[in-house]
Length: 57
Image 1 (tube, one colour):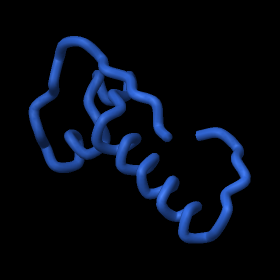
Image 2 (cartoon, rainbow, N blue to C red):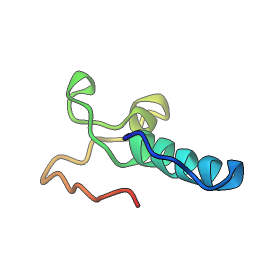
Image 3 (cartoon, rainbow, N blue to C red):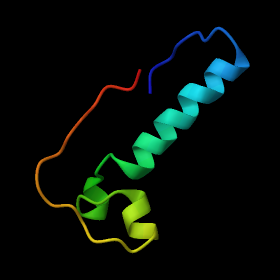
């Protein structure tokens, strides 16, 4: 997450919500053996294979 001047509190909440969703549901974590925090928490199987990185806009 990068520092950014948002136009409003609503816009700020929107971007933070999107980043937290990305961080917990899509971004693999090396400390979790390549799994996402949600996959570990909800005991879902890992998705071994390529890592897809997408820009958060």
